[in-house]
Image 1 (tube, helix red, strand yellow):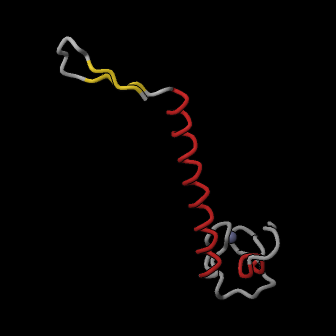
Image 2 (cartoon, rainbow, N blue to C red; image 1 turned 180 degrees about the vertical axis):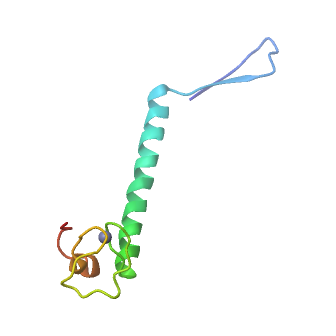
Amino acid sequence: MRLAADSVGFPFTTVTIPFWLLTILLAVLPSMWAMTYSRRRIKHNRRFRLCIKCGYDLRAHKPNEKCPECGTSVSATATGVGSITS
Ligand SMILES: [Zn+2]
């Protein structure tokens, strides 16, 4: 970043930001936010026994059943063990 003040008396200051820095900031920060949001959503859904794929309330379902909305295994949602199966 570079600041350049005009010595002639121009009342504004020019701020120059390298394009690569702007690109990194606009690419990395939203990616970090998306990953954090995804992890929090999965943790929240497991805690309240919601389907980790679609968020359907699975409290009334047994562990061997599947989510009626998307078909994800309830056991994978409730325990967090195993992979998501449709
Ligand atoms: Zn589901």
